[in-house]
Length: 262
Image 1 (tube, rainbow, N blue to C red):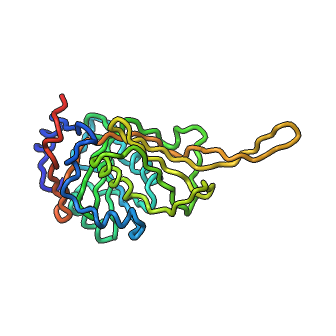
Image 2 (cartoon, rainbow, N blue to C red):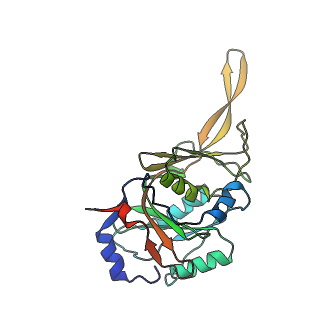
Image 3 (cartoon, helix red, strand yellow):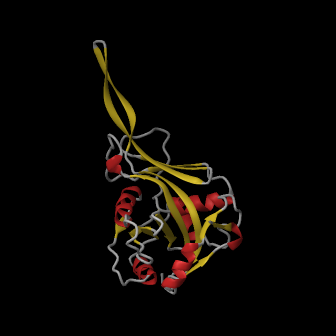
């Protein structure tokens, strides 16, 4: 992390900060969402760069940053993975991503507590959200996992994000998905991504409709059944920062919304 020493990073790890609730009204206060809202309306198509979070790397715990990044590539359309060099600073990565027209940056890593994490950075307004995976089930571990339809963006269904703070959290994740025109009829040509907030946790599921033959008596018919595409995961919001899009420096937002976790 540009502008942060290793000693400062290790000291911060000793006091783990957590969000009390997604209902903290001041959590996303002060960010300009005008450009992000153009993604949600379909005026701008999102483009996401996914890479690993190298700072604070430790050999004490197995690193799964690359595996997480690969799974996230299957979740977020118009995303691309970049192998990050060991000596690259966050400010350099952000500068490269903005130059190439990316609207968001995702950093994936395993921290030295063994927790898998992603950090989503909005390159339009500098908002940054850090999440821990409570449960990540890769596609390879999902029985009868279906392949999502190619060349069709998933339709995103969002539920349970009702408070001002949770709306901001949903907006961060929604801005990674291109806008899909609404249709009352489900289509086998398009998958469905589910994003739901329950008890301060964000649940993600991904399905497509598959046809299967149903044989009954002398006649057979074809029914359409949902089939999971994966991956399947649950996220816990751990922190909100403001990132300098010039230097990569981060500033913790809303200190009153955080408590020390022993």
